[in-house]
Length: 354
View 1 (cartoon, rainbow, N blue to C red):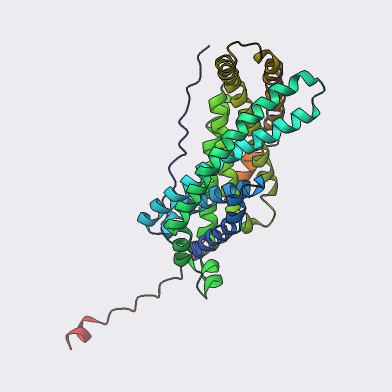
View 2: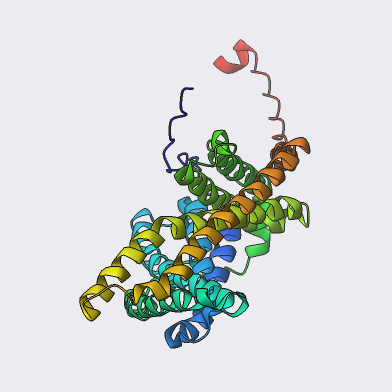
């Protein structure tokens, strides 16, 4: 059977827009709100005690990057490139730390709940190494925060986008164009997600399913930006996006464990051999590592089946088609231009000559 080709992870090129006062005012409100969400998390991220600070700031930076892209025409091009670069660096550092926090939480919960005590030494050893890695990642997080603060990116964005007094009038004037922009951006993100649909029933295509998760995440953030325009009408689509992102994310997490655990076991084996001069102490941790690999393989299968069931259900309901229809039908008709006044008749030739 011919294997499907792997599409690129790059999303379709964003549509070209001309700046509109109402659209840009709406976009300014979205971007300013996200900037102000990031600030309260800084101290908690620096302390590194509560993993939820990392999670909230990571999500906020991703949403901010999406909003800057959606409303790029409202901002100076040279500035946007610089802002996006600094925010992306912070998102990357936060992402590594957050992923490690999630892994540690899973290990600690499993160690507590596992009935066979022979598995616990291996789980503890793995948690020990991850804890050491997390400490090193905190250094990267602090540097990324320092770099962002030194760049004054958030201050520059806020200074640029402070709302004017006639904001409500500007938004009202640009409503048709705002709904049009919403539809265009949502449709583009839908197209991106569906470019990976061929892999939904091919669970062995790990990379492509992970790329589909990224596309679902981008669609979700785009829906969140424009959700206030539709009251609660986007609620079920957002829920489906979150479910897609979560299940595909959990599948990817399992894939990472399954891929890296054999390498970890080999490295730990060599470390023990070098320290003790023999590998017998490795026998104490090996059962837990073998158990965890099998546990992650079973969990991946369960999560994949749950995702496949949801995806088929959404297809049967024509959920994604309805999202496209709803956002298209919500675009108000542009007002008809006023008729031009009738051209007054030309005077008779003899009057012109007089």
